[in-house]
Length: 151
Image 1 (cartoon, rainbow, N blue to C red):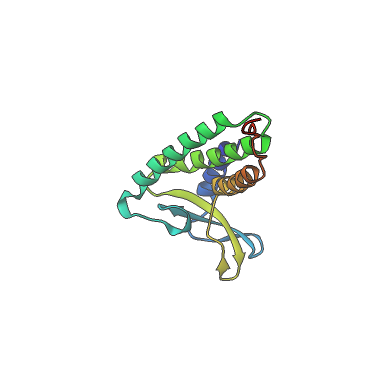
Image 2: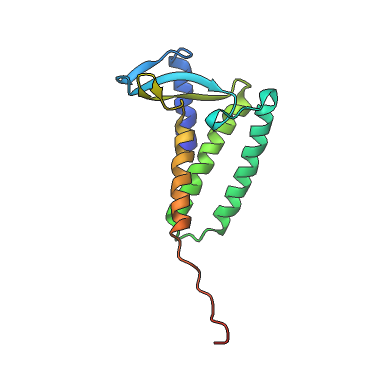
């Protein structure tokens, strides 16, 4: 679901927004501003090799997420959902990297005046929320019971 929502909203953004031209949605707080990010979060960029590097890193991360999913008990619903959000978001941004060299499509622009959060997309939101839920679920997971020594 996240992957479809991400791809769909990115196409709508590309079809209806002008590059780097903010469109107010909720005043100045929430705007849609089309941008392409050839790097990754927090401005990580490795020059012309960035596209290939981020494709490989994403595939490695997806493999790791798959193994985590396979080892997660089915009753750990929060952890399963979190892994799904992170994987869906990673796949959405990966699709952009395969689709073209311009980078990942970003369009959600939050802030006030000149104080703005970086522009992001539905995939980024899924990855962030999924990572937080995953960390919390792993942190609060009960310790496995171990047999007592000698007893």
